[in-house]
Image (cartoon, rainbow, N blue to C red; front, side, top):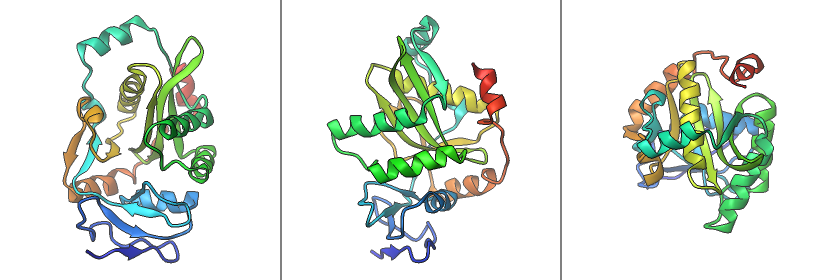
Length: 230
């Protein structure tokens, strides 16, 4: 099957790959701008050497529509207990580092030091955001991703305490609902996400919805909006 190259930061059409793993292209110099450009085309990087980036566009695509998040009875009890404190963008740098180090302890990670630096820059520029979950003032889990228009591109979740990442996803969905976000791009399915209401949709539908909703503006992560969450 054909594999394309990213030259001069130009991506091939994201529907061109028919590979089961969704691998579309390789190459390009990793940078915040290139990562954003990829998201806008429905493409993401994954499991790559920073010197030889790999770009994916799977079919189908896994998404969560915020209003359809599934909250089990057990999770409702945990939320009601208020044992966790949840914040948005309180400590992006610590959260992404936790994602990286915890994955390195297990199966390895695509979050290299270079990727970590790129997302820290995206955060400083107002594109990347984190949901942090705290227990007794210790960071125990969360997630991060990139917001473009009214779409949130999820990148990684982490949990060093039971249910912390689920709490983060539920909180994010409830937060995004307030600002009429359309979906959270989860990229590819896993049992954890599917149990929370994620669904697979055809790539063509994903791209159609993406193109429609990234054009809309949102103030969800503005300082004023986040202050109302405190």
